[in-house]
Image 1: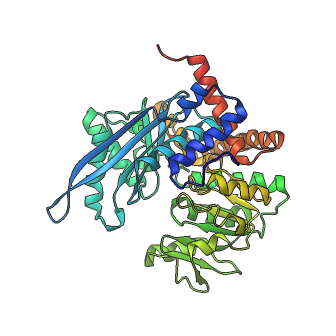
Image 2 (image 1 turned 180 degrees about the horizontal axis):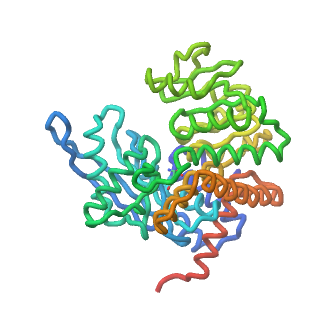
Image 3 (image 1 turned 30 degrees about the vertical axis):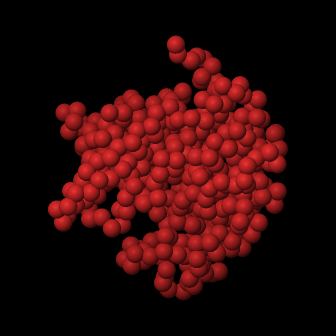
Length: 421
Ligand code: GLU
């Protein structure tokens, strides 16, 4: 848009810009727009951790509670050396729209700790996690704010947080986090939920666009929890051909395709996907520009920008990551006829099954994997349909359509709740 400032890679500025765009379309009251552009509460914690060599290190962490008009705050915790307050703000903002567009009764939040989990021992990671959990315990809880895994955190991280909060309270509090191991109240299907939801979103888009998934070529950037399950499910359940995947060390490519499960085993053994037999090495950047049917960015923010959007060849971009595409890149892709399935919709299966896990914890009665999967499919298909219809009716890209649906619901909640006092 001509009246917008130059492309920014500051994730919170990106998030605010996305709100502005849709605010105009929805003709929102400027005061309401201002509320939507700011987080409700931000907590910064600096806390000491004793390292294995006896030294003390001070870590900085955040928990940002963006908006709770629709229900308790919800969102993951990220461990990464590039975590910043603005990144956590953006991620908490995106969680708000994600929960809204998925139709689940949560607001949005996010947490992060600036650290390098790759260089930490398990003991150091556990002590850091427990101390961070204790530091943010003043604002989290099953009725207030429910964390979950994100980049470089997992079920074990959630188990330590659940245990720390339970020790503070004096009784077991399973509902304080989701994405827990099954042994302590996790939900069947939560592990693969983000990817299964992403697969359903891809399937819904493909059928509307006339793209055949059987035999379609797929490139996946990022081989963490989201990327590897997505590659596996697309191959196993849709018959697609996985031709490229990557992790933080680089990527692999083979036009004939390969078995994504064997690649995961190889990565677990060697620490990288690169070197997998029968594939050639490619960079993370080159992977994005491959001539494939489906491109799934499943790593970090700002991967598709105005610098490379003109060279993306995929028909469908399925955003497993949060914030992989900038607003400027969105415009370029839309004009070129590339369908972007926006993060807040496409990867909403994770938080949806987190919601199911929390419901099962509160009712203390658990569902089968089949029940979880079919409820997830129902939610994904329903959310996809409302976004698709808005995109077709308003003649806008899927991201703006998803924001329109999500923001309208949050604004409606504000209207009926009113502003206190
Ligand atoms: N971190 C995931 C996300 O970005 C899951 C959040 C959750 O389950 O609360 O959607």
